[in-house]
Length: 206
Image (cartoon, rainbow, N blue to C red; front, side, top):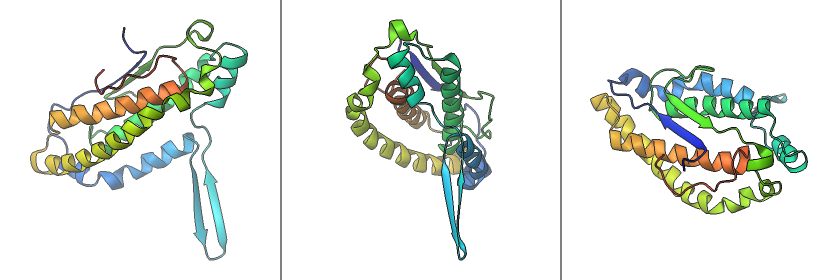
């Protein structure tokens, strides 16, 4: 049976922009700031006269869905849609930073990122009390992902040089980075977005 969280990125079967790749760490800054304003990030600036704090509203909804699943056996559709669209936007920024697409991330168009959750019937598909311990049950995944994320970071650095010299993203490396992101998304959807009770598989593939 197909896992209820699906993620894929279109492989860029074309020459990627060497200039965009070389300057990616700088060009991504504006859209990261935009993402921060809707994902609940907080920035603090210090200066000689004191300090100022800027906070972004929003962020993924966790406590609200948890309480509704526990006490009302429902997952409000608009909360589900918000979490899904926020994760889509976050991953468009993520794959841009990972050099998997040289098109600037859109705030609303899906572009090359395909992420879908199956909307759950909370009364039928979700256990009332399981959300309280999902984050704990996912600990084995955290351990594996710690090492996979480090490996993916190293691969992206290697890819940066590969694109500068060849203009292409090696397919095997692309599939690996895509798989690591997919694994992270499955764990997030299970333990924190709470859209499924099916335990995430230990694999990179779809």
